[in-house]
Length: 276
Image 1 (tube, rainbow, N blue to C red):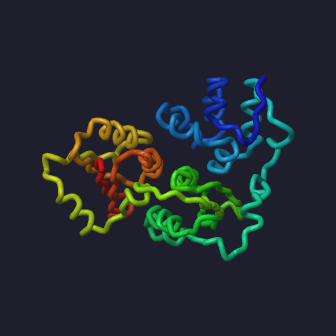
Image 2: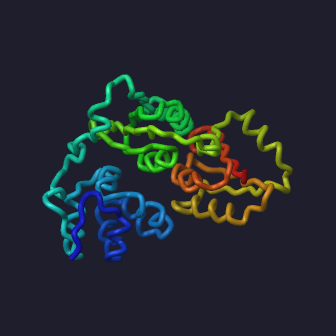
Image 3: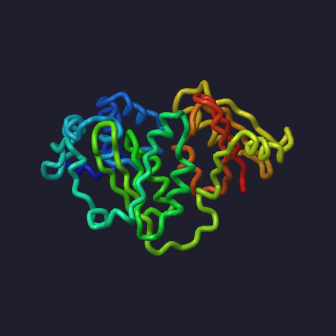
């Protein structure tokens, strides 16, 4: 028997009992991704039961139902809580005056078919140490949470306003050491002219071109990471993608790659990645 809570990471469950993969996957279709070794490696070590529940619109009781037969015991009655948003705010947020919170509603940007990632990273960079950025979205942005933790977020908190509105708070570290190569400095969301200008710096024989638009998840990410592993120095990987791949960007955040993205239209994203 192993005691767990809503804060237990999915990877801990799998390590304790490999049968957890099929059990959790049976809860909801989005959780079937855990059956894929690549996605499991990416997601399981980062996501807790509470986060997985929020991301997939399921209940903690659903996890209790499938995990209890495997010998897992939930601490107290936390598993019965259906409103995870009732989790108390941390003191750094509860006591924070409104003046130090930058509220940024990215829903209009997403509704217009654009990706707000670059703007969010820049906005967080402008937040003063000890102050807070609040990203307002229509879903829990779990990949963004992990990405901003690498960009000097000391702590985070997700407040559920409704099933279509989530406020994610990011507290910036009070003592911020300068970071020569923050991910915000390595990621560029370019217009067509700027993107083509970067592309023109490479000769055709220095460019490896791949199209991952027709691949099922996690094929695109697996293919891109595989190509980057063998990418020669001074060369660039040109990618046709159908979306801005946030999980991939999170994987590249602590690696020495420059990433240029041109969002042409819905379903048509051009990417250029090369070593800095």
